[in-house]
Image (cartoon, rainbow, N blue to C red):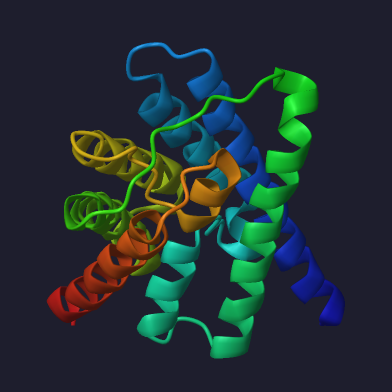
Length: 199
């Protein structure tokens, strides 16, 4: 049983690290819309690869949102978040060896950015909740979640960096209270609303 738990945390660390590195790479070699497409495709793949191990949250906003509707207990959620942040920090420290100088993002904190991150995460978590509540077939889960992330980022990018993930925000250097708190607020609201709608 203990070994099973460690596999979950390892999957979350690895998955968040892969997602963070993919986003950093897209930012480094910036192409139009590359970040939302790369992030969506990467997360979709991670859902298929890691979903049966840990659920492939790879995002504290997902974990805290699901915790808020009692889909996981407090201690387990805390360990998931620690693993996710650790995965992002490892990539932040290691990525320069692979990518050279990392992109420097314009980062600020405002109510507008908070709202954009919350809105994007809200849309993203609706897709996650559809999978969690078995409204999407397992074969389409990666498409639903990856597509929801892509759409959420596109909506948020109008006024923010479109991160929607506090761990990835740390890993790419987009750190402010708006980027750390916004996705969590949007995720929790989406989880509660979706649960109410499907009851």
